[in-house]
Structures are given as C-alpha cells and as structure tokens.
Length: 120
Image (cartoon, rainbow, N blue to C red; front, side, top):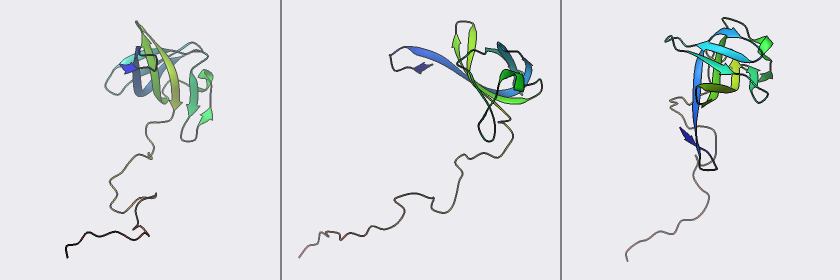
C-alpha cells in the first residue's frame, strides 16, 4: 500500500516475467516463480522497450517476451501503468559497491579557512 497525495492509499504491484498472452486491452505475465497476473491496458498505460526508452504499443509485445510491469490494483483488477519490454536480463545501472569516490559534489577538501578552538 502506498499513500497518495490526497491521503488515500493504493496497492501497487511490480512484476518481472514473460508474456503469456497480450491484446490491445490486457497482458498476462508469468514470473519465474510461477506467479501469473493479468494487467488491464488502457490509454494511460505507457509501453516501452529497453534499454533506451522507445515508445511501443501492445502489438509490439509478443508471447515469450521478457517484461517488467508496474500496476495499480483496484479490487480484483490490476491496471498496468508501465510495461517495459526487454528490461530484465541486461546490465543495470544500479548502485554498486564501489571502492573509489563517486562522481559528484562534496568529495574534496574545502577551500576556506577554519576557525580552530585552542586553549591558551
């Protein structure tokens, strides 16, 4: 459950798996662990292809494709908000366990003069 800006809650689902069936109105995805879920596809559903986001349509998806789906449950129905084809098995850009300083601000010493506190 996720709290929305208006204070109400919604159930969000995320699933990675293979397409079992797809039409203009729905997609059924099966995860590696055997879980299967049907998602409604509507005008608000964004569909893309990885690794570079390229717009796609339900007709571009086919049985056996690997997809990642995000959706919102309303009762017994789940509406897909995002479907990304080809998103599961490539190299990711996630956070690693690097041993060197990363790119960004705050990794070097400052240029100012400090005010030391000493006892005299």
